[in-house]
Length: 295
Image (cartoon, rainbow, N blue to C red):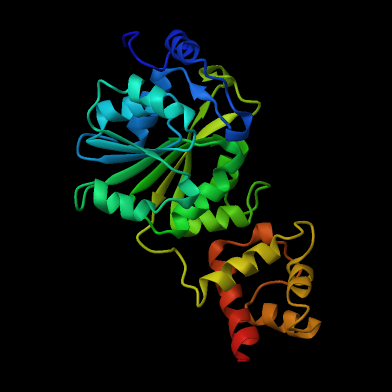
């Protein structure tokens, strides 16, 4: 590894000083200054010259540069206008990078993938996401059903653990179910604070989400399913029955809730964290029939 890479403390500081750049806390800017970490992420993401890469928040181009070296083409979304001229300079040696100045939450990523990459080309999203907005970004990307094979993202360690958590653990919740409905989730590495400039206040992990061809459970209505899951976790210490009574107070009486749980063959005294996704699906389908169709 040579010292030419952007992702070194010295080079990063030189770039920032040359442009008089100051970090914006509101944008969650923490730049990676270790190229070995980036290469490890890229390897685990499955990036090679046959694949396309999408990045969110390239900053001064540290990860973008490594993606350009390993991928066929890279498209990166950057919201901070101040970084555009820096990226144009730092990424000059590479002709396979496209920078889009847009908020990822407002972007039509699916349309971009279709227009910017080769038909049928495997596409991987790789990003060091702003920690304050990780969940909205990932949930938008998952709901949009993008033609993307996997998402490999650096995020807050606690959030990564929640997204990958299984039943009967304190991290397991509605977010775990939502993410794992669309993907297979795995925490692939933890990353120390010292590889960032400036160091974040929280610990970081890299989470890999591999898109499922189809959800692992069949539900009658997806929105209803996710509503039921959220309702069951609304107050973690309460039983399923109590949480569902609260959720359905306008449309079902207490006895209907008890009967529904019995019909779903789930003990009403259980708590949400003990249910598998399959049990949540059966529960949601049972209550959909009872509440929505009256059967």
